[in-house]
Length: 186
Image (cartoon, rainbow, N blue to C red; front, side, top):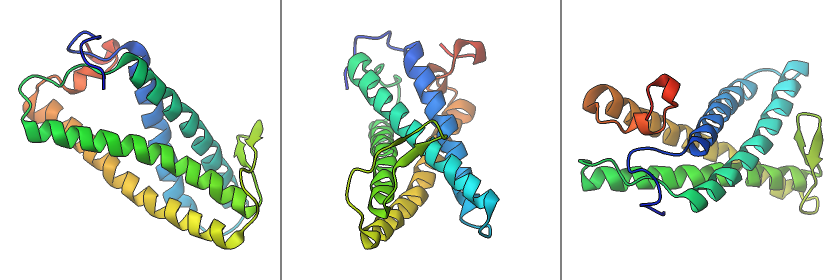
């Protein structure tokens, strides 16, 4: 990551916007996934699946934008006073979040492709299939996607838990670096 090109204590506005858009989409898609896999088949479940797919395409688009933004703008230096292990843990969780948030929609798109479908975006368009039909492979890909979802829940819980610890216990300004100014951010 590039350091030194930003004020040392905050992220730029576009980085904050992309962070919060991805966060909102991820929390929503995880909630939908937990519900849609536990209800009986029918029109409501089909609607949830279609909304889940559209959010997945949106997350893919947003996470690619986030990665490009991160490469171009970098990130501020770590908050002063953080222990080495905290910096390492933060880097690991953030890296795993980026990789997982990129991998999950790509694996789902591959799964839909091998099932013989494209990846729909809220009825506006569909990303075309990128492979030939192979239903056995589709099942494997959706199984991987499913288990990555639980891993994502773990990563999100760790990320939110660490943010809450910094905000409520350490009161060290880590969270304020990513908050919009209207909410007390820097």
